[in-house]
Length: 300
Image 1 (spheres, one colour):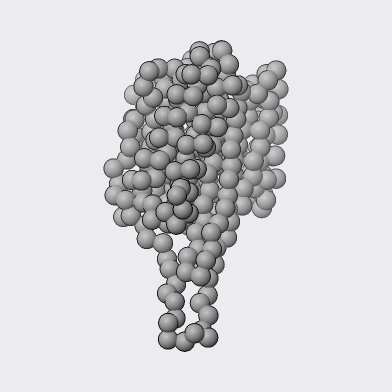
Image 2: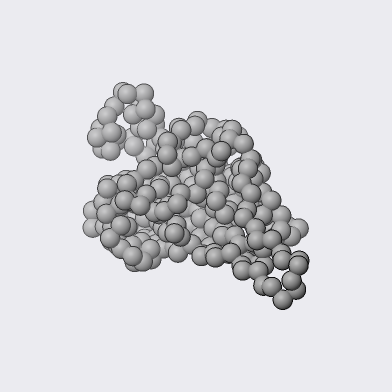
């Protein structure tokens, strides 16, 4: 069984989840008894996505970077959907924040995509949870190293979400977030903020309401490029059967309440239109930070 982040979120502090590698893709056997018989390719839908990024109302440049890819492979026997989504938020107050987030995304993509598709796309279909976590972990390390080598003093969050058929793998460091909004669009945070205030909240020293207005709510204790060894959360789960996955920077979730994000997504059929409405909501609330969001509508 796959561990299910979407039923119950385990707050893992560093290191990989330990669920076993599994997940056989459904195949349709060839009919060898009748050469005239035709096999029916599996029905596969690409992920419908919405993407948005805004400088906000109070910044003079954008330190967020994002990446979104949705693709499918269909053959006579196999149908498979893939998606790769990243949001990185350059750390404000550090040198080269915008460069750090861009380098992080570029290095993550440059590391992960070749490992998934080389030497042949057929390898993708044999990958299980453990291999996917290893690929994402390698990508995080590449992003960390790229910032250290090319943007000294810079730092970045990174939340990456890779979907392969029925497996979702998340790589996360910092305080950008991944969410699942179920069929009723109930919000569930899939990642744990690596912030001082979140740690205090988890320890029961402050309440969620106090955390929301705490003067140190943007102070991170984990980020790319800031220490010698990177310590990211890597976890896998089964793909939910319905709803939306969302990856966003704190310029959205720190300003627009989760229930309002849920309301906007649930009432908007087109994910791209929903992303525009979320940016508008964050800017209407003051837009104190850069805002980035990716919405992934789960087929079904």
